[in-house]
Length: 134
Image (cartoon, rainbow, N blue to C red; front, side, top):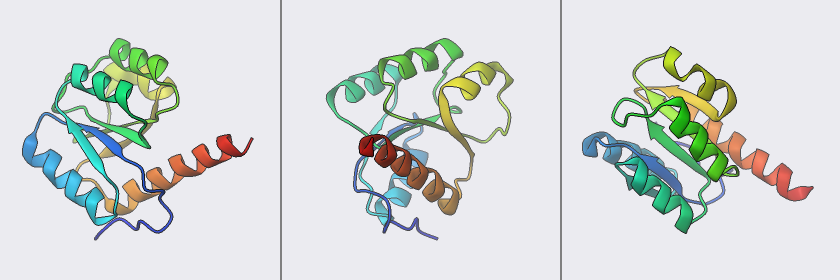
């Protein structure tokens, strides 16, 4: 099932995933919804891309890229207007409890449910529009 794109503003999503096959699948899922995706494989590439462009959201794969509370907190403080989404096969990440509570917009379980991803991207867009309207 494809993500419904009618209410999602056309803006790029930045995907950090070190698994090229999985990254291609997520990119295809977003492309079907007419959402542009830029992909990176490392945190340093992620930071470089985030400095160069504005994104609707960043999706970070916790299974393929090692991230800790400090690195996520640093990303969130450097780029506070870009929501961070995480994806993982694991439902619980106790080692990231602080980041999940304070800095991560949502965590999605793999395989990604297109409707759930659509919901979170629409929520992010609505939050962004509400802030812009103020």
